[in-house]
Amino acid sequence: MHLNPYGGSAAELAALLVNAGPDADPIALLGDFGYRPLGALDERQRTALRDWIARLDAIFTAPGIAPLNALLAETTSRPYISTHDGRPPHLHYALEDAPLDERVKAYTAAGLASLFCEDPGRIGRCARPGCRLVFVDTSRNGRRRFCSTRCSTRVHVAEHRSRAAMR
Image (cartoon, rainbow, N blue to C red):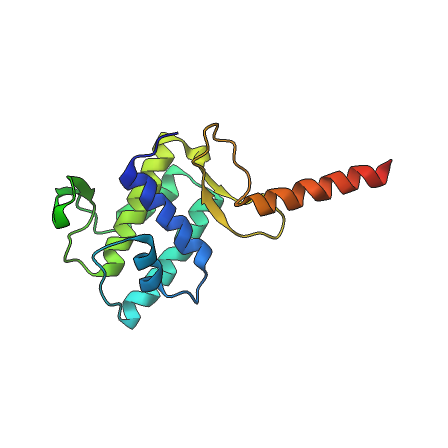
């Protein structure tokens, strides 16, 4: 599946933020992801972003039109085309000078909504019992069930051992 680079990246950022956990530094995560321009977060913005990440987590559990529309409605989304930093034209969903938490909210909500409209089955949570990680399925066949090869292997080895024990 070929993902729109903006929507696809935004959905992947949503998964990264959810998987990072509450103690992760959002500025470092955004920087590592290549999200620019960065800015500082005050305590209100950090709290708002933590709350937002919890809401994103819920979308990966149960993606749907109503919850995604609720996220979109809460953003300061104002789509426009930008060409900053010598980059080719691309969409922005919040003003470049908006607070960082508002930009992240608009970006991730739009990305997940775009992905949901393209193929809702591509928004997933790992099927291994006990694993809470989420993912954006970019596989060719769209049948990904696990966050990683490691989780997939654990499940398949356990299934194999269970079958072998029954013999």
